[in-house]
Image 1: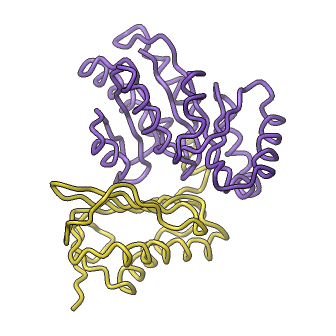
Image 2: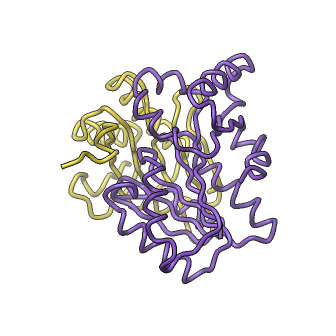
Length: 130
Length: 197
């Protein structure tokens, strides 16, 4: 059977949706940077991206990390919201998927990101911090 | 209707360029529809695009050049029938091969879909060009080689000397393809791309 283009490139992707409480964009940026740094350590470089969209009825913002030297880019605004629904995804190359899942969970815990994850076989559903 | 396939590696700036091009076409009175593909189960770009008010279809969980070929064809037909766009922009996943996407769409021309032109815009990332050429050269070049125009993006993040070096290398690799340098973030160079399209 022919390989797909994703398989040829060595692509790995993880994503989940949910609701985030106690919204703190700085902490989310740091969480994304930690994931990026883990990927760089594992694969030698970050070839891919880490993205998160956060939205409420009135506002929305997309966070995007493709290069550690430039940091997390913000597109949109969410200044008036304390919580939001989110979509989160990582697409990258040359890392082990289960280790990446672990790295994502570790980053969420390290930065005390308070969130509920929708139905997911890979992740614990609730992360709440005092 | 004109169809544009925006190809390029993960993080090269496809979505940012897509939004700029869509905005410029809209300002010129064109009706724009968008199909965005994400290899993972969860998409993010579709949300971003819809938030800007565009008709967007998101195709997650695979690649439209291989595992989602049927889904892509159905989506193109559906978008054309539902929205009658003047411009259809397709953003495959960053690990897709754009020439395969083009072939898949060509296969349905004359059935439910008619178009005037179908072009591939290949996008390169200045900042990580050296890394991709070093680590994934064969795949990277395969992604770009069938482009109708090559766009060297993120020129604002490198020196002029570096930019010219990259443009020179790309010119040698693809001597018959027009090359435009730009910054999708600032919009510098996007008008030139629009004129080529």
